[in-house]
Amino acid sequence: MYFINGSQRLLPASVPGTSNSIKRILLVRTDRLGDVILTLPLLPHLRKCFPDAYVALLLRRYTGAIAEGNPYVDELLWYDDEQHLLPFRAMLQTIRKKRFDAVIVVYPTTRLAWLIFRAGIPFRIGTGYRYYSILFNRKVWEHRKDAKRHEVEYNLMLLKELNCKVEGKPEFFIDIPSHVESRVKSLLESSSKKVIDPMVIIHPGTGGSAREWPAADFGRLAGRFLANGVQVYITGARGEEQKVQEVLSATGGKAIPFVGRVDLKELAALIRSASLFVSNSTGPLHLAVAVGTPVVGLYPQHTAMSAKRWGPYSGRNRVLVPKKPVDCTDCLRKKDELCSCMASISVEEVYDAACSLLYESKEHANGAITHG
Image: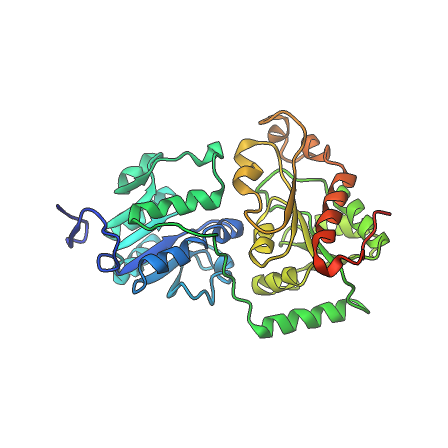
């Protein structure tokens, strides 16, 4: 059977599992850093399933560096100009010219659904649970808010609509060029008289994506590390300077802040050079997982923000969650106030989890850190 799409091209109504039917594929993920990182595992499967296909990614510019240099991607398309979304008509013209055969909309919005429908892309894959899902002709019926799977697994499930088999461990490929590594090495050397090993990065913010462990507790945690000979670096996104300063002040200025000093590629290199990364649920935590750095993650017990969906997906990690009722709404109603549930996680719990990860590493098996 055949159908006629918006661009009046005839194509088979079902997708054979061969590269002959799909020649040009668009993958759409236009939200935040962590979301894009958790979408990267789709790319090697697409390439394996369609080895000769032209694969493009539609992203926001601030996340674009994560995909630059990815061997599974042929082109990056931009959804914004760093300040504003690109005009709908201009986006429509760009996507129409690319003549994609299939699109996977991992992050669905009304605007994106209408955009890819108007572009006349024959195979439009997206969720079946939104009012605009009528604009997708290959629907996946899963409610992500229930957190029955990890975000990576939800994303990979979309591939079944292209008959792509998902086998093996997910691959998070992030290219870090040698010149970026060299710049970060120079920054580390210039920021301290001596680069100490082990080195721990603390990232106290979330960009508003989840409930947060208090910055004051991150400060006390940093103090524990420093007292036991561990060098501490503090990272944060633009707008999180106050949180970083609170952590820094708690250490008497002994920790080293890295806010506004590195771009996204350099942040990846910085995190890769660390022995451990400690943070709330946030994009840089997933970046740490992707580059192979052990992580300690602090997560709320709220289902939609839970570690089951948003936790570190692989690698060595520890996850701490408040021992409070699931889906407690007190903190959700008081977004600008301290979350008492997250604050119930003690500094000692986090420090012990960090120590256990550091001891697992062969390079720290000589007991470089103590529980003093």
